Image (cartoon, rainbow, N blue to C red):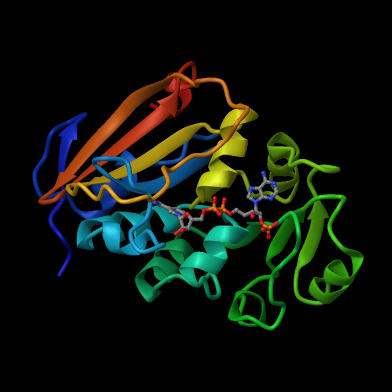
Length: 253
Ligand SMILES: NC(=O)c1ccc[n+]([C@@H]2O[C@H](COP(=O)([O-])OP(=O)(O)OC[C@H]3O[C@@H](n4cnc5c(N)ncnc54)[C@H](OP(=O)(O)O)[C@@H]3O)[C@@H](O)[C@H]2O)c1
């Protein structure tokens, strides 16, 4: 059974259904980049090195629904390795939902790796419903490019540092306008520094984790980016906060 979720703001409502959740998080028309993270209330982005155990059933429900609306899921290689990503395949009900709307059964999958330390024989590539895109740097070793080329599009998005705006442009050129990124913190930090984040969907899990876990974004270069609250959902032990970059409220609020 679905975990109960209430909408606190806007339009308060109890036990909202999937359509209402999807409506709360509807992508705006222009190209749009959304980041999705979970954190403990004291700011831990991981527990025992992964994010999964921070979130509960309601977080998993929202997480799956956010994936289904996306043209592409964008993830940093550190997260792919730490969280053990497999192929980017959605559940049957999400596939039906997408087919009814005339979009591909599964979103595309785009990874970011500067070193291309990725296993071409992993399910991420061998079981992919469509050819994944791997964004990398000009400095990536040629041998690793050669190893990945048979199973993925390998695209330079910067000479020696990542250019998130260039990456976004490439996605749009492929018709992938609605980007749902699942992190991680290094990728998020680079996108904040480049002014390339339109939205953050943050799940706050009601725990105090302390410990030495990192936070959800990391960058030595980013200036603060003002965000505006666009929606708040609530489940028993979680808050779901949707923030849109200041100035984009008209498009995405
Ligand atoms: N709380 C949450 O919601 C959440 C979400 C996602 C991840 N996490 C956690 O975050 C941890 C991983 O953190 P992370 O910072 O390593 O994650 P990450 O950003 O996914 O991965 C970092 C790696 O991705 C590539 N990358 C990312 N940004 C890059 C850039 N600007 N330029 C070049 N390459 C770039 C590099 O790959 P190469 O090393 O291959 O060059 C880099 O080492 C894991 O423990 C994971 O569980 C938590």
